[in-house]
Image (cartoon, rainbow, N blue to C red; front, side, top):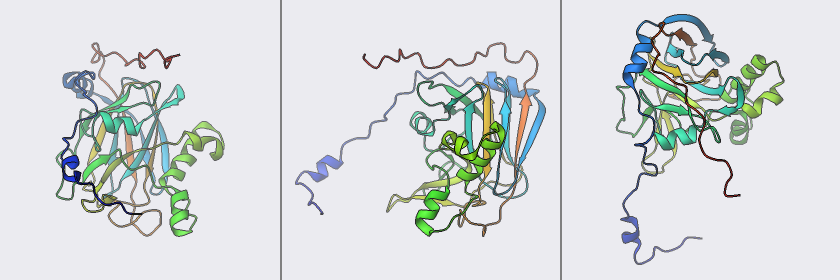
Length: 282
């Protein structure tokens, strides 16, 4: 049923937008602290994530990691957990509300409730130049959930096992030594690394377009707590045409892990969990 617009419809639509969260009291991004940490950092490990697959990695608090494009234009789906407690994990929705629909240098990846603290801080982004294009698209989004076999089966009737959700599930199961059924509930909404996305101006539908990422580009993070990461090299390749199939050229991604220079983090303190009492009025 369609309802007619009320007489004061135009006036109602003229209400001014109000930013939901005033974020001036968030912990400030101390560029000098992170610059000191990365100035003479030493690479201590690396992981290659194969096309249409995922791999896990671990990063100690106070260390840094990069996700790097190495062979071709490729996007990735990133999950993060507290390595010491998988119940604390990346919260894309709150990250979106506190920062923006797409993130870059100086933004943080926040954990779920009740922890609600920065898990990682973005310290460098070679695609920071992209900003927003004429379609309203940006890079590194926290709005898309991840391609998954359930949605794909619902829309196409096909079982496809190399969606990012399945890739992340297999990799986490292998890391933890458990079944995929046990690992799957831990897999969560992602940071879409290098992915170029937005909402159409006419129908407001989520869209993707070919990523601007090229070999040599990277996004770099500082681990604010001990992290377990899981990265999928999306079957959509650069997401310029399709996903959830094998028709798009795909390339590996590289995860590099760095140890900061000795004594470069004297001013750094790990973030504590939320100070809320947890009583919920009871």
